[in-house]
Length: 194
Ligand SMILES: CC(C)(COP(=O)(O)OP(=O)(O)OC[C@H]1O[C@@H](n2cnc3c(N)ncnc32)[C@H](O)[C@@H]1OP(=O)(O)O)[C@@H](O)C(=O)NCCC(=O)NCCS
Image (tube, rainbow, N blue to C red):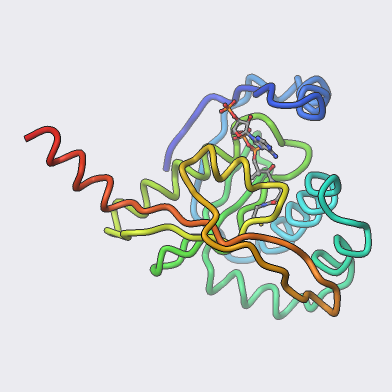
């Protein structure tokens, strides 16, 4: 479990605005922990906030409602998270974001709540995923990434292997499959240091 000092980033006027709104949390401690059973409702709130507040510049309202509908199958959602067992970012006892890493290296779900956007929560989750991948000797990370998060994943060394359009509840959404090779980098580093 990593404990990090939360700091605001200034990557856009939107995030600077969010940083001002959230100045009260800027000095709080953040930590990443494993998913606790029964907290899937908190994760749903993060998911809803993240999709509707942080990706609205890239998708229409109709697309957002199809991706993150207000009504959902609670049992199916609970079962999904019991199986995924995501990493959860906590700020001041509040769930601020979450992300899940499968043994295949596939990142399933990577969301930060709108309220905590731009404070390094996503980067802390990404660092945790890389540490977990290294511990599990996972050679490659991959994720289906929204248009809104593509530059964030690029910053963290991913590249878009495939751009695609997927149908979600009858509505078409564009995203991309992004990948990052991990073990190749380690091998190269070892070779250079010899
Ligand atoms: C993408 C996301 C996870 C980033 O989380 P975050 O906590 O706001 O990111 P951070 O504060 O850790 O920012 C880390 C870096 O990425 C950059 N960054 C973050 N979001 C960005 C965005 N949307 N566009 C461009 N850069 C972005 C920041 O400038 C920062 O750069 P720096 O380290 O050089 O200052 C978050 O915005 C999110 O949940 N988006 C909506 C959901 C989504 O699309 N998820 C992806 C899976 S489909």
